[in-house]
Each structure stands twice: as structure tokens, then as C-alpha cells.
Amino acid sequence: MKSLTDPSQALSTGLAKIRTEFHVPDGFPVGVVAAAEAAAKRAPNQHADRTAVPFVTLDPASSTDLDQAFSIEASGGDLLLHYAIADVAWFVEDGDAIDLEAWTRGETLYLPDGKAGLYPPVIAEGAASLLPDGSRPAVVFTVRVAQDGATKLDGAERAIIQSRAKLAYDSVKASDVPAGFAEMARRMGMNEKRRGASRVDPPEQEVEKLADGTFRLSFRPLLQSEQDNAALSLAANMSIADAMFAHHTGLFRVMSEPDAFRVQRLRSAARALGLSWPASTSLRDYQRTLDPTDPQQAALMLEIRHASAGASYQPYKEGVVPWHEAMAATYAHATAPLRRLADRYVVRCALAIANGQPVSQAVTDAFARLPQVMGRADSHASQINHAAIDLAEAVMLKGREGETFKAAVTDVVDHGVRVQLADMPVVANVKASGLTQGDDLTLRLVLADPDQRSIVFEPV
Image (cartoon, rainbow, N blue to C red; front, side):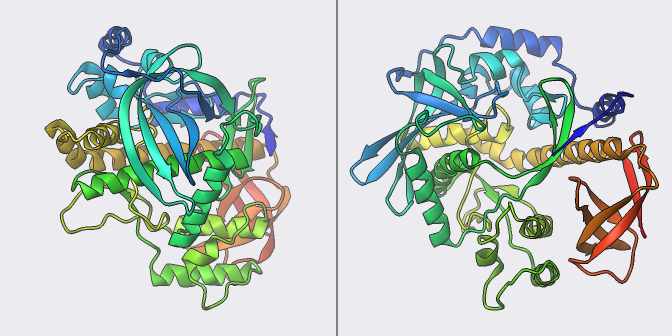
């Protein structure tokens, strides 16, 4: 991790420029705010009372838009996950001002100096957020997790819940979470291994705002608590996807595997990084063995991420099995409706299916429109994230032009190579020839321009 010294306020200025350049919304239109304030006062009257169930939330410490709360109980040899998802649809109706604004946004945008929410804060961080300061309406999915990690949606209902605690990834203790939390994560991991899933979480570059107002650029692997918590979402999303597919409806998250050419390049990258990848081992099996705390293995994990064609959304199509290669399963997004537009409709669909009701035409019509809307939103968010990282790198290196840095080649790209600095969380493309993956080299910094979000290195 590296703190960013920014006495000239280049980072703050650059982030403001990114917001303008990428049209990041600054607040909400007056009409949307007024509609949200009125909707936030809507008293739930179609919800069962489940305030006696000991739900808790687990998120980054600073989060206030809490989509999920959970409770776990044993049922014979099975575990029952009671997964409460914010009932956004209770506050947002099809075609109202809040809904129309959400369709223009698609998802919440995150920047180091703040976010641009999908919904106004009075809903996203207040009435719908599963905070522990009072009861909240939710859709509670009950997911049965067998001893081998197999999942099944047992039921869903609208309910009033009361979170007992707002737990944070970086401080949670085993005694804070419901009994069965670690066991459920273990079962889901075993299930992934049995399916041959290749889901990996490499450390990513991250720009984080600290409590004192400064920023930090780092490569941050997931904490164990984050990985265990992700297993709960995985269980819910897979069971909901299976239920939708069985009922010939739904919106699914799909991803294809890298083609043979890309896999061969990844094998070359592994050799160059000094890693052993047996010829008889598939990419799916091999990447599950990689350790994100090891620099060489983490570098290969990032290259695998870059080699992927990326995930997208796909509505149900008769005769087509929607498949997510990394999950090795039929998969959907349902657990973050405060942050992703698509999830609100998947939740509505699953709620109807679980209760023997028809899926509304409004939801079915939305499934046809959402892939394009969500694809555009995902691309927009990715562009903003890359711009913020490019800016942070330039700010970190400004004033060090002429200095030399040790680096390693992580991939050969058009007109050069991609490198990772040895002592800084910086990734850059360098114009160079005759280099292969894994080569060590020394670079001289030629330019670091925060205004253009640009850094230029040349080999020494």
C-alpha cells in the first residue's frame, strides 16, 4: 500500500474532472428527490413480521447502502440461509420518477471521493437500507445448503426484519456472525470444487479515501471475511437462477471461457512467471490453485482476468442453458438491488415463482431491455474506475521523472509489454521489444501527468 502525497490537490482536481468528463451524476433531479422522500414514508403492509430472526449485515465499514442481511440455522444435516434482500420494489414503482432515473443510471458509480447512487440516499441509505437502527422491509429468501454444498431455493417472502448488528469485513470476529457461517462458506467452496468452477478473486488496484482525507493506492486481496460473505451471495444467486430457469423465465449472468489462443498465451505467461502448469490441467482447474498473496501467482490471476471475454446479462431463451463459465453454473444477480438495476427485477421474479404466482409482464419486458442497459452501465463504471486508477498512478509518480524503477513483464501487448512495478501498485504499458512474460527490467520514468492521467516509462 502507498499513501498519496498530493499537496497541489492534483488528485482532488483530477477526480472532479473525471466526474465531468464521464458525466457522473451530481445528486438527483428535484422531482426524483421529492418522489423518493414520499416513497420512503410508505408503510409496509404486505410483509410478515420476522423481527425476531437474528439477522446481521457484513459489509465494508463505511457502507451505508446495505443490500443484504443474513441469519443461518441448522435443518438436520442441511443449513438454512435466511437471506434478506432490501425490498427496493416496495419503494420504487414501474414508471415512476425514481424508476425512470434508475433506468438512465443502471448502477451505482463508485469513485474514491464518493459515489453516485442508483437511488436517492433517502431510499438507498435510509428507508430501504438494512441498517440496524430500526425495522426494514425486505424480501427474505430461504436457501437450503446441503452437506455437499448443493443449493435449493426453499421459499421467499416479503418480511419486516431487524438487523442486530452492522459488521465490518476488517473487524468482524467469528463470535459476531451466526453459527454456521464458516461452515456454509466451506460447503460452498466444496461445491465449487465439485463443479469445477474457476471463480478467482485476484488482488485489484484500488484507490481508497482514508479517514484523514488522504488517499491510498494499493493492490488489495480479499479478506477471508469477504470471501466467506461472498459464499452467501453465491448460494442465493445460484438457487434463484436455478428456480428461474426451471420456470422458463429470468435474467441470467453469463460468461464464456477464454478461447484456445488466449489459454495458450496464459500458459506462456505462467512459464515466464516461473509457475508450473501441467499440460494435462485445464485453465479452470489450474486457476483455482493460485494464491493471490504470492506476487507471481497474483500477476497471472490478473492476466487470466484480462483474458476473459467478460460477463454479460442474458434473458431466458427457450432451449438455451445460460452458463457462467467461471461459476460453472447457471447464475444470476439478485443480491444487490440498491446498487444494480437488474437485481430489483430478478428479486421480483424469484418472489413470484417461490409463491406460485405468475411473473408480471412488466418484469418480463424489463428482462428483454436490461442486457443493453446493464452492459452500458458496466462499461461506464469500468471506464471511471480505470480513469481514477490512472490518475492516482500519475499523482503518485509526479515529480519523480528521471528516476528508475524495477519492474516485471506480465504480458506482451500491442507495440510493447505490460509491466508491474516491483515496489509500487502501478501497472503500465511500455513500448519495448524482445521481452517476454516474466522478464525483469529497469524502467526510467519519462512523464507523470495527472492532468492527462498519463505515465510514460522507457526501458533503461
